[in-house]
Image (tube, rainbow over all chains, first blue to last red; front, side, top):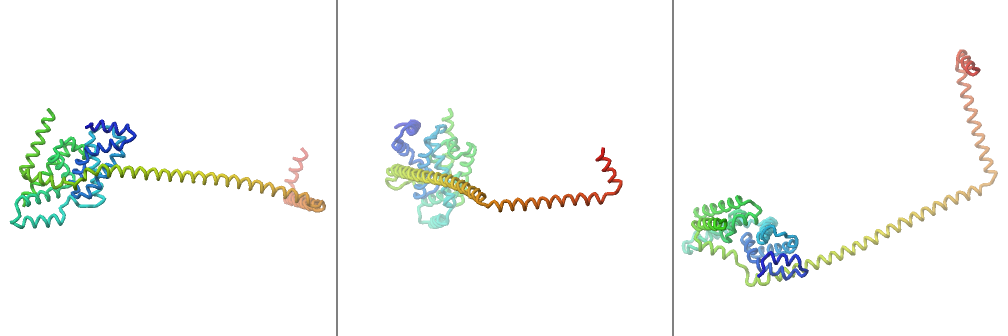
Length: 180
Length: 157
């Protein structure tokens, strides 16, 4: 498989860009989608945003100067598009919704439920109650194993800022879990 | 060296999280939030490409419309210019005709009328002159004898 750089050069030089772009999409679409879905949680929203992201990438790829990694660039577009989408939709997806609380109270109140389900719901709630920035840093660091420099590049912040966000997120999760 | 340090730092962060929540639970959480409908990723690139092509076509159509609009705009500008030039030409011709009519009408005036007009004007001019002389006389009458002598001396010298 060609590297991102080779594909981008091919895209920028060729007339028939669709084929090269499809290759780039096949390579990165899953990670982009997962990053978005972790922030919005619903597939329909994640699909809408993912489409917007790839259309934007198509429109801007000719001007991409490869000063940063392609994956960092596209994750940053995805991050910004998701924030814009959430602001437009005025969805409080990062906050604990009434439904989540209801589900959590029901689960923790019944002693018949297996313990893992309780922890799952608690973890879900703990992560959902995090502010957007802390949540995305936590996901990128813990699940994707990205270094802080890349996370800072995606979010348009400093390495120190990314580290602080991760630490605050873990402390909040700990506090939330211990309370239960 | 840096990579090793980074790996170590990542491991420490992950261990910290796993000391709070079990790794299995974390993995299960990740799985539930990173699922997609069946065949979603298979059809996604085609969906995007067809959307891009649709947008391309729309852009072409709108560009075509703009061209047409420009064409109409050009015609409108040309028509306005023609109207302006035509209007000026017609206006100019009309004013020339008007002045010709005046000349013709002057020529058509009978000589008697012209003589009368001049005579009347001469009478008016004479009236004006009389008025001016009377004014001067009135001014001289109002002067004292000494002032009149001074003026006479000045005239003589």
